[in-house]
Every structure is written in structure tokens, then in C-alpha cells.
Length: 605
Picture 1: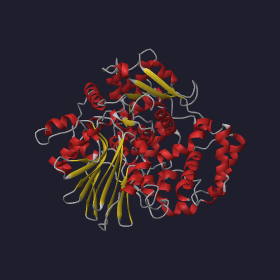
Picture 2: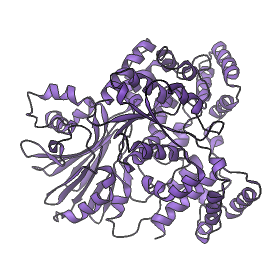
Picture 3: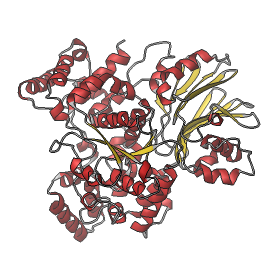
């Protein structure tokens, strides 16, 4: 919805609007419709607005409470604001129809406990001008970003990292521990650390309180605890559909045009079909990335199922040449390295959507709550094995092999049974000294994530350690084009109930609840498909196209790339030479390229 930023001087020196407006200007893409600044003594708040709900000037931020005591800046949406407003109407005299004012009133009524009743995606800060204390929080699963640092006796926060960098007194340093996790585990947002040393991310489901110069951060939401509290062994596909439909109803609340991502997969198609059957059929736009029928990653055959449904369908065609042309602004949008090009397809979808709508519904989250990826089968099989449910294990193995004719799930099963020391991923391209520096410092990915004892635990750990990067990439790509991305599968009540039900895989099929719930709603060709493509691009083909291949080789042979201490140059050179001669693509290539471009832009200058 917007972008927020702020500065708190610990030495009680007054804040001026110059650095705030400097940050605001750099994130104007997040809020092209309005902007505002609030300054009192040593605290300053900045805001840029993308108008979504109540487009009038009454939605201006920073927003001040009626009594003048509290000031809020909010990035995101509170989807159940109408219901909360009704509960608060006798407590607070509302002047607008915004969710921001509802959140402000809820905080005045319930303090930090207001977080428990919020259904939404948010990152916000509230200043108490009487005590000069600061309160902030981030949503349950990490949809909306919140970055911060403490530099030169200042607490600086913002929706994007480059805003913070613009105020630092020295050039940033890279965080080698995160670079190690990126190169070895493909992880980018699993901890509070970022790729920039001393710049941090407020973790999902956490809040912060700043009293004087004392910063206190603690968790306010735990998915694991919520799931354990629930008893939903009788959660049926009908109840799932009701909750899913309710989530969509809440997330359709908007005073601007909206659309859906339509990849052709089960998740985005389910959202599109449900929305299509609601009252906004003639207003609905869909946006798809396609590569040409028969090209790896292309889902045209499934997207075509909607050709005669009356939707306003739009298509983008990412190519090697478009990636070559976009590569710098693509990395500018995300501000940190990414492990593959799948996000580029989403980036192009958002670019396409900007001419038609301001809000877009995205299918992210269904795979994580209903075990959509094939490697989830490994932990499903492990769970059955440890519980000694051998007849069911044999049946599920049979159905898996019959339906998928793949060994991915079996390999994942073997992987899941091995101890953690066996699970160190491929480090063959890394410099030995770099490996030795971090391999003994195992983070939760090794000890907690991969050692999950059940499928339910593994799914919950995905929300804790793995899933957030997809949400942040979607937010950053969307907001780069002033598009707000919403995720109906991430309604927290839907997530909690689905995970607590324990119903995900049945007879070799993932997402059992969703498939059963979408009978007579979703095209059967999509509902019954068992392949899992994901948001893939034909990356291996693109990297053999002349422009992109030449660009990549130039960078790989550059002095700056060879000077990095992360990779084993001899091994990398061999892999690059093989690629140059035979076109044999290595999936690590993109990571090397993305990291090098990031180093050049932020660290070398």
C-alpha cells in the first residue's frame, strides 16, 4: 500500500525533514499518490501513499489521533478493518473510512494486544507524543517489509534497504554469513540479518518497542503455538472452501481496480475462479507470464482453460533479451541477490499489471500450507515411517510412483532420514577458506529446518525459515510498479486451520483439501493435474542466448568477480569453460551473477 520511514535520534537532537524526504524520494514508487512528514523533537516519521482504501485526503499519513497524542505510519492493509471499526465506533469518533485510522484506534483501545485481532499484512510504527515512546510491528508471515539499523546514535527504519543506506555515514559492508547461506542453501530472508552488515529485518510476527534509547524486540505471533492449540481433525473440504472464500471476500476490499496472477497452476487458478464467480466478474483482469508452448515453464495449455470465461486476460512474454535489458532495474527493485530467475517472471507480470489495476491477488502460500512441492513427500513418508504406519507408507509410495513417475519424493525421503551432518548441500564451487569460516556455525536451517520430525512440523518451519523471501520479492516487485500484492491463502485463520487439520497429501496427491474443495469451481484439467512446475522460467535456455550469454561471460571473466573470496576460481572457471564450449548450464550461474551485480552496486562503490 505504501512506504514508511523514520529517524529517532538517541541524543535528543532535533530531526529535520531533509533526511526524511531524502528517503521518501527514493521510495516514491511505493506511494506516488501522496506523502507526509511528522516531526517532534528527536523523532521524525515519513510516509508515501499508494491510495487503496478511502482515496480522499482523509487517508493522509502520518495520521494523528483525534486527541493529538498518537501518530501512525502504516504500510499494508488491515482486511477486517470494517468489523474492528464497528466494535470501536463507541470508543473512537472516526473521521475517515481508512483501515489506518481503525488500527490507530485499536492500538489506543487495546495497546499491543490489538495485534491479535488484526487480519492483514502490515508493517507500522506508532509514536506516543506524550511519552515519546515508539511501538512497531510486522505481520504474522512477513508480507510487508520492515528494515532498520542503529547508526551514529540514530535508529533508522524504512520499507526498503537502499533508503537506509542513503543516510549512512560510511559505505555498507557485506554480511558474509548471509552470503554463505545464499550460496549453499539458497536462503535470503530466514534470519533477522540481511546481506548488509548491521542492517536488520524485523522478523515476521515480531514487534518492537523503543523507550528512550532502549530497543526491545519480541515475538507476538507463533504459528507453531497456534497450530498446537487447535483441534481440527474434522476440518473438511467444505469448511476449507468457506474459509478460503471468506479470505477472498476480505481481500477484495478495495476502492481501486484489482486483478489476479494467473499462472495456470492450481493455486492462482483457484483464486481466479472464486473471484470470477463473485460479483466483480466484469472488472477482473488476469496477468500471466508465458514463454511459448512447449517451452519449459510455459503453462499456456492450462491458462487457455480460461479463454472463454469473459475475463480480461493479459500476457507478458519474458525472454533472454528482456532479462538482459531489465537486469539492472530488476536487481534495483529487489536490492538483495536472489537465487534464480523465477522472480523475474513475477516482475514482468507486475510491470504488465500496472496499466490495468492497483491491487493484484497472488497464489503464494498454498504450497506451504498443503505440501505442494514434491520434496514435501519425503517428510510425509518419513512421518509415516517413524509412526510405523507401514501399510499406509507402502500405499502412498505406490500412488506416488504411479502418479508422478518420478524419484524426487523418494530421494527426499532418503534425505529426510539422514542425520544433519549428511545434509550439507553442495559447496564444491566455494572457496575452502570461506567454507571453513562458516560451516561449523550451523544456523537453524540445518539443526531445526531439515531435522523436522513430521510433515506438519516441516510445513511450519517453512513459514519460519524459508517462505518469507517469496513474499518480500512479490512485495518489492509489485511496489516497484506501484502495485499492491495480496495473498488470500495467507489469511492466518485459514493457515492455522489447514495446518492443524493434518490433511495435505492423500493417495499420492498434494493439496487434497484444495483439490476437493474446488470441484465444480475449477477447470478439471487444472484441478486434477499432479505435476508441479512452480513459477519457473526457461533459465537454462535463456543463458544460451547471445546477449545474455555474452553478458554473463564478460562478468565471469572480470577482475572483480575473480577477486571475490567466496568462490573457488579454478572450479568456477572449469564450469564456465564447459558452458562456453557446450552450452552446459549450471544452476549456480545465476547466483554468481546476481551476487556479483549486487556487490558492484552496493559494496564496491
